[in-house]
Amino acid sequence: MEIDKLSLSIEILKILLKENRFVSSTFIHRQLVREGIFHSECDRVERRRILRVLHSLETAGYVVSKIDSPKGKVPQEWKINLKAFPYLISLSEKEVLSLLLAITFVPERYRKLSVFKHGLRAIDRLSLFLQEEEKELIKESFEHLSHFSERFVEVDDKTLSLIFQAIREKRGILVRYRNSNLREIFPLKVFVYNGVMYVSALRDKGYRTYLVNRMKVIELTEKKIPDYLRKRYVGKAFSFSFESPFLMGIKLSSDYVKEEDIEKGVLLYPTQFFIEKRGDFVVVYLVGFLNKMFVSWLMIDDVVGFISPSEEMIKIAKERKLNRQYEELSLKMHVNKRRFNSFRNLFRSFLIEKEKIFKTKNVL
Image (cartoon, rainbow, N blue to C red; front, side):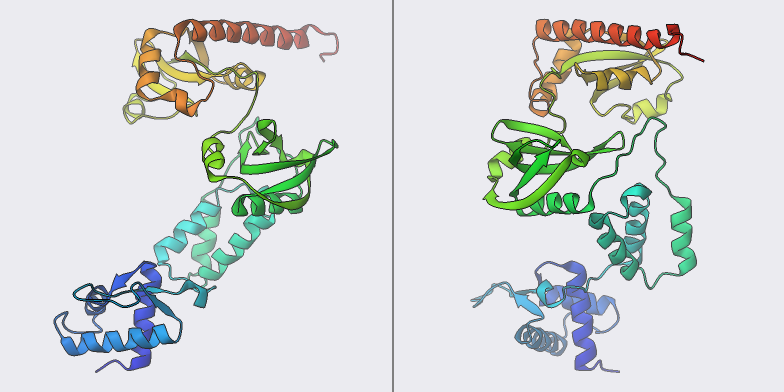
């Protein structure tokens, strides 16, 4: 039975929604044949029907053509006009299930924020065709569990929404930070570290990281950040002026990680750039920092020894161009050794401070 024009229009729109790119009538014809709607890709009558429907949809504003006036043998292509379908999107069942799964890894306490709430509503709307039992099974079977040392600080919903808007529009915001004077900053990205939310931004004095919970956004400004500046700093996170990145290694016990995981290139630390089992130990090379946050991070892990910077580390770091990833990282041996020794002193003083806790009379 021949398909009517309305049904054919719907099938073509479904194909264009799924592809979301410019495609030819040949491509559309091939998809319709695969779906069993048409019979042959060589049928010229079927091809003419597709072209008539496409022209009608373009006239109605539902699709857009790529070439204004195609000439010669250059084939015309069409794409869905998303402005005509602001709330319509074509997703497969697997794609919707994947979205549901992804949102389960967002910590529960962040889901009530507006920047996530709208997305959650959209996912619920998109998953209407799924069985309730199936959706509940996903929510119950996948969960983000916080580390025992992870913190959490409430953030103002309006503040975060304005930061998010400024990032999208590449605009500045006028803020008051820690009850200081008003300042204009240009937010680059929001990130969460150890349960606490930060925003990295540029201001007249350079790059800086701010605690979102200590910030109050007054308004968005009209000034915009140039793309070259945004691209230069968007890969950074913390902006400690005292962090002085350096190369170092750590030793872990041989049973800390399985050998097959090492062979697969398991990532134990975010700044790790090398891992290998050597004798009774697992050796990891990573970029370290001169601050208490990095020291405390290593304190809670099963580290059994530190490794001083070596020629091997320098060679690997050069091959991977780590100095581009870590702006202040030096690939000179004497600089890395000096910073590594400073790290050892910082680690030692950190241990002494913690030891005082057990020597005080206030311990029960």
